[in-house]
Amino acid sequence: MDWVYFEDIELHQKEQLGEYTVDKEEAIELSRKWDPQPFHTDEELAKSFPSGGIIAPAIYTIGIVNRLAVQGDSVVAAMAGFGWDEVRFPTPVYPDDRISILAECVEKRESNSRHDAGIVCSLIEVKNQRSELRLSFKTTILVEERPH
Amino acid sequence: MDWVYFEDIELHQKEQLGEYTVDKEEAIELSRKWDPQPFHTDEELAKSFPSGGIIAPAIYTIGIVNRLAVQGDSVVAAMAGFGWDEVRFPTPVYPDDRISILAECVEKRESNSRHDAGIVCSLIEVKNQRSELRLSFKTTILVEERPH
Image (tube, rainbow over the protein chains, first blue to last red):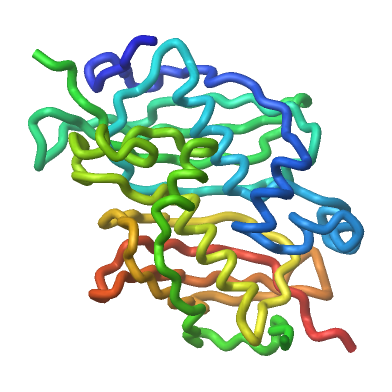
């Protein structure tokens, strides 16, 4: 596994983080504890909601993004996270959806407070097997510079 | 438990969602699966990161917000979520922090597409026991109108 340092990241560089099949039991288990809304936890009740059935909670889909981001051959040397912007759920993520994740660096700048790191903002797009956008957000992180 | 419908929510109305003590084992368990960064999962490695120790991942803190939001005496009749804005982690959430959560309705409007629901945007603020802001975000949801 190779570390990707601040200098290695190019503006508008795109990277496929991989694919993942949404697992109903996994999504329900996470939801029962951390997002116990009926449309995430109860297959019968979920039918009466706009989603028409059980859907994955945002923290599950973001969790898949997090997991795939550190499982690749090259992993960004993240030191901390500052926040997320424009987190959108345009259409729900359903069980058995095969999602793919694309990351694009949309901003990078030096840190004002640290000489060993820079700030990178990436746009994350999660699409399903029909290339429909299911979740998108911008994440801003502190990335280590290449050690001298 | 009472449902809070769209008509019941007033602009700039604030509500305490409750308090929760951040549990290190719970945060690590969630992180191992859904946010496996060393500063979330490894107590020794975490010491060399800006946080100086293990910190809770954002999805755990947001999970606590979700859980407290549905455990109260009055629960918003949420039908779906549209997204989050300005999700900020100004300072980390550490194990054993006692966090309290405040929700304020910052926008409400009728839905263009549904006659049985409206759209509510709430600002969520998570503070620790010293009233330091640890996480904030705006969440926009579809809320059921009171059934006739």
